[in-house]
Amino acid sequence: MQKRKDLKIKEDGHDAISSTMKFWERRYGQPLSREEARQIIEMMTGFFSILQEWDTSLQS
Image (cartoon, rainbow, N blue to C red; front, side, top):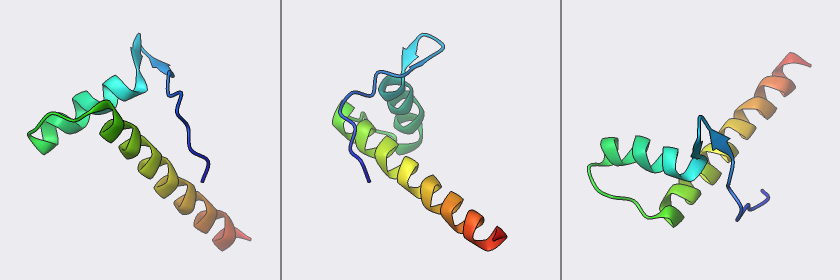
């Protein structure tokens, strides 16, 4: 999996890391660092990539 250090993707004026922090801090109940949010994005991206690969292999 390719690591990305430059997660500056804008979503409605907010970068992906800030949006991830806001979403997961509410569920986790504690503040997250930007590095923790970056790791969450990386892991979720990997998870959904695997699901897509499995779906593609099942359809062929």
